[in-house]
Image (cartoon, rainbow, N blue to C red):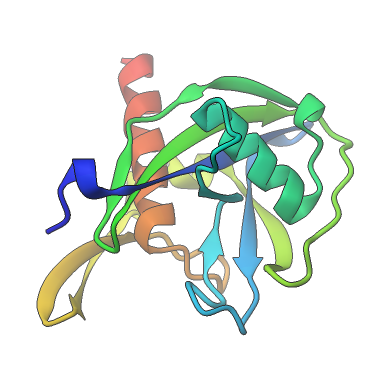
Length: 172
């Protein structure tokens, strides 16, 4: 197991879109040719770089690079607890609210498409699944939240589960 101090720091933006029909969560589908996480559903994000002054800065920079979302269009609401990934990353999830309309321009090398899912889908515990897999000879458990033919799993689903827990605790 990788110790927290040995982890590679990264940050993701959890983009909450304030639609008239309700809040949605924006996701990216990674391109199929990438060496890491090819074809997977994720949040915009990546490694912390030397010029980043904070995890918020990393998340906003990555969202701008990957989907063309201008930093000025994101109202940062806060961060969730760090999420440690067995592959050696410590991911800082940054939650941001975005008012539509907003421009997007996908980095076609990294992002195949973007799509949105209503936030209320993730707030229903019946949509949270726990699954098992063999990873490097060890059994691992992960979250999965399939939605309309899309398979949201792993770190992305784990971060969504943490968002669910934070929102649930604030409503109690």
